[in-house]
Image (tube, rainbow, N blue to C red; front, top):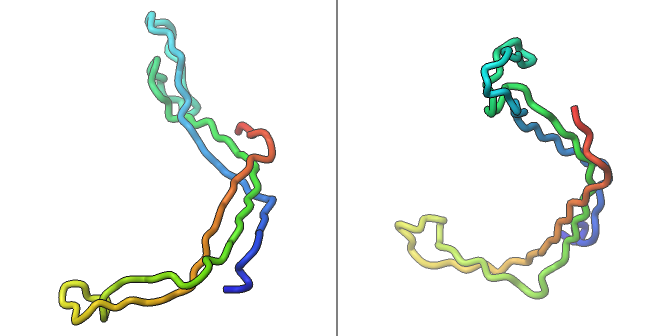
Length: 109
């Protein structure tokens, strides 16, 4: 676990998301408009067309050791229904802090 402790950075993250497009629509019964699939659009409703976004980001994660031992409470044989006795473990642990930081403007596709 010693090798995990410290600050780690990654600078090449990409997040992809897609949201449905909405047709602002003409509710007056004008000409029918078609979506990219050739289907008629319904005014004021989500369409099957999606607007996709790709965002660049970087991550920073910092692992810090927990001073002393941590008590992990449980039961013998990991069987809480037919437990013969309680079993406590003493383990060492770490805490972490993860930051995700936008590094560039989103691109639309």
